[in-house]
Length: 369
Image (cartoon, rainbow, N blue to C red; front, side, top):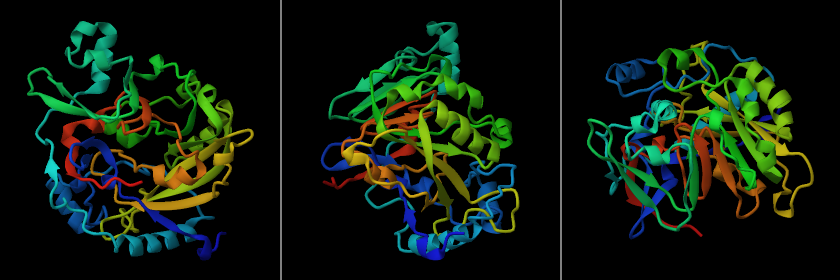
């Protein structure tokens, strides 16, 4: 068992990472008020919030108990450290000087449009059709705003960041990335689970369909690949023993996302037995010689904490956690992406979900060197 002295916790604030840049030192960020869970799920304040629609369970840790006895002590201590660290962060409520870009819009149902497009492109709104099943790229240094009109709905905007590319398709039409090499890859498969199936929030994936993704051909030397998994041990074993082998990866680490409230408490009451206040990230690295810039060893365990978004299954950004293990100008790919950010190549059937104006607000941004 690991000692407490080796436990450290990084705190992430996804709402401080710019999604797009606008003029005069301002940028678009994920809405800060999405990250405002104040009381753990299962407590009286949360039940009151839920009745008013202000809280949203993300389905993590759904109906499986996870046997993590060898790390339970470290996890408990990590939550203590997370609570201390979160206490030093300013309020998570909407910041002064922010401007909401739009809340009462009707967002596109991307999987539905893909299904309609497969039958006939004419079934899809004319503003949406060009974005489907093809590589879309903004290779300029400027952000783009796309005005989109949906059937029987007013116009809304999608914001496309600079130096990015994306493909909106299902796995049967996975794009050919063999001409590109990536140093960092994030994979967030919609694993089969009961709560997601009941809610029909998004399409689930057959784990064995992941072998259709020829990722091995697109990995640079020393590439780091992070795969989100559920708490079912069989999916972790699948990733480590089968998927990583097919992709030419060696499993090097298991990381833990500690999901906390704005006061730093675990999001699930400790008395609940069918939920876990953390999610698991399996980290692999391409087998073979490492480049000079990517030669730093990845720790075999890491803890990081953040307040989860009220938007379903929205994961924190991992850039700051892995930057020390990547080349300076790392080439980045996200699979099953739900947001496109500056400098990333993204694929999934909902790539632009959180580039929708409904999830964004404009705030001042200080460029960092």
